Length: 445
Image 1 (cartoon, rainbow, N blue to C red):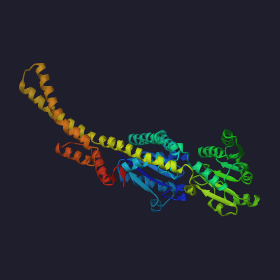
Image 2: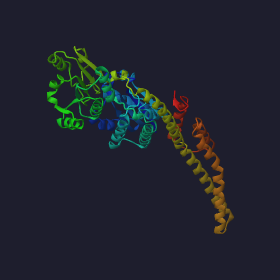
Image 3: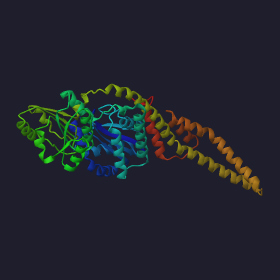
Image 4: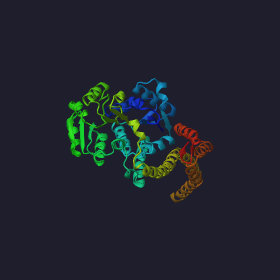
């Protein structure tokens, strides 16, 4: 059983590709169940965020499992295979483990050290558990990764330097307007991103924050947390005409603000300038809105150029975080390698036991009528001989399991003692041998 990850992120695919790949939260459970039925996929987690869509899978056959995930993603996004494949990255076995460790630590994010990703990975794993599509490999994989993410935040204090997509959107507004006090700010959406946006706006000195959502009750609940004002979604145009800054983060699957709608809004504003920041994926605001006079529009990819005052501190913390990831990778490698020598050790012990039992029975028969005490002494001696003989090869094999030659020593032992070991174990070592040539000092080259 092998862990693999196939996905796209902000570095490999533009926003228009990522929004086609994204999953609405209500569709995740069905997608998980569907993917679990593909060939060689035994366990699966789908991580869908604004900057990445990744499928983590436990597969019985690496290449077939990867092909299954690729086919699933192409069908989901409505892509021709070759059209999508140019944007995908693939990590297998140890590279997949390291990748998830870095993701959950915020080291692979568009905004270094972002605080939301740990919770997003945790929720993705919980969704997979609830859908009944995890297995032992996936469970160990993600439980270890979440532990790594918590350790990174505890030991490096990287989350003491606040950053997130929402935070960066507010930083952008500050850089453009200077002070936010006195500015009329409208938030579209009432989910987690919107709540974080409201929190950072208030911390930045914003005094007038409006919240609009299709569910007016949810808008009221969020607005009340920050002494803001809820506005009906049906009256959105009226409030777009008044706002200086609009930050949009809904879960809509289509554009909330079309070009035609914003054109009418700007006419009523007499083209008075407005800043629109769209941090939703899929996007809430049609990209052609940016062409309208008086409109400044930023989407989530535009935020990567925003540098905030905590950037340097996070970069220092990230160096320590990378060391923690290296340390945790070494622990994983040791555990994983030892796991796959166990069948060989068990087979060796069983063979020794079988030989001992046969020879002991033959010897006792030849000795004829002996006392129970004598029989016990002979049996104990036979056990001691087998245990002493196998102690050194078993101990050494466990040690060699943590080296690049572990698979070679395991196969040699299997051949020398003519051991019957499951084919899955042998296939594992062939895959490890292929990967080991690409791994140096704990990092994939």
